[in-house]
Amino acid sequence: MIDKRVLEAAAVDAGRAVAEFDEARQWLAVAEQGPMEPLGAEVWVFDEDLAQVLLVKHRRRGWVPPGGKVEFGELPREGAARELFEETGLRVELMDEPAAVAVRSYHPKLSVTLGLSYAAVVDAATPFVAEPGQPVAWMRLDEGWESCFPDDLTRMRQHAAWLARWRSRH
Image 1 (cartoon, one colour):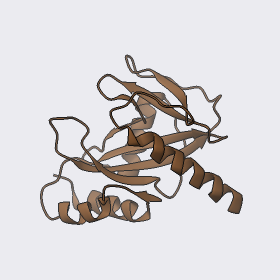
Image 2 (cartoon, helix red, strand yellow):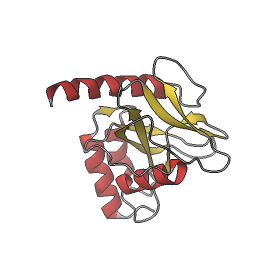
Image 3 (cartoon, rainbow, N blue to C red):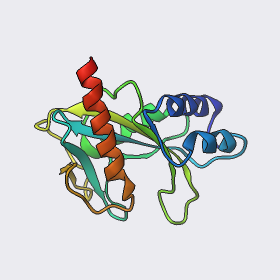
Image 4 (cartoon, rainbow, N blue to C red):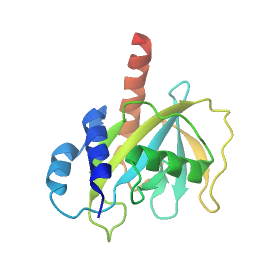
């Protein structure tokens, strides 16, 4: 069971997300009424040119953004930052607005849950340290990669374009 403070933070971040997929906000409003699976949180780490994204090679899911389950009592943003550090060794500032909110299942035997994607931009030369057995690599956004979430590439490309427009205004 997810505690009320965490659900409230997830709802706020879902409402502030730049992009919504799978009617996630409506799904969350219904899901909040009963017991809910743990939340998922990940970080889309882009290079400064917004041409690459940092991914980890998961044994079942293929190339995916660093992320995972939000732990009990942990806010989604905190969970995303913790997972990023655990999987890459990176401690970076996440952008204020979440990149996306979606509904997905992280394993064939699990029900769907809310997934929040946060974003960060770092120098591609920033060193990272992969978890044992889970390689980390920069992947070009103009090429594809093997993943059980094929829509991620398009979503990340769209967010990189949004970031480019955001930068030009600020």
